[in-house]
Image 1 (cartoon, one colour):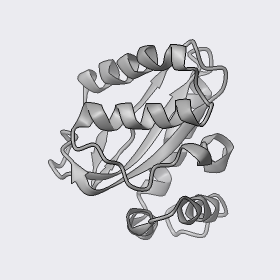
Image 2: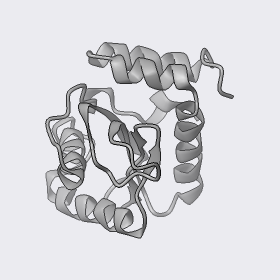
Image 3: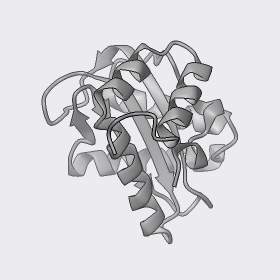
Image 4: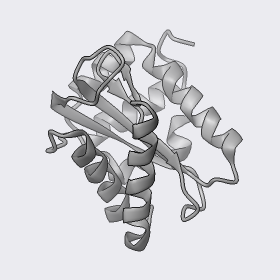
Length: 159
């Protein structure tokens, strides 16, 4: 499974405006609504599901990275997006550091294997320092799309 198989390029946010955890999640979910990936009618339910998941434990995995995610019955296919916060957001990460790089993921509840494979792919790529550094420095959607494509083509060292 490749990142570009499920990442919605039209929803990528290169300059997140929010400075609070819940607001960042809202902003990313809204970007998926705007891009037509999820219905405006399902927006609030998806938002609440992600926040509920965060209450179980932060998806801030450290080194300035977070992967908020959920399964929701309103989505028919795995979808996600990327967001960058230049100033960083306190996401209650495992290492206590602010988060600059967000990968949001939503999947149908009847496809847990697909959800897990997507999370594994994201986390594998995010272990690569070069990939993360380039993503954090990206200022255009096209830059991020290109980095995702390069990651899909194994152009970064972390395998």
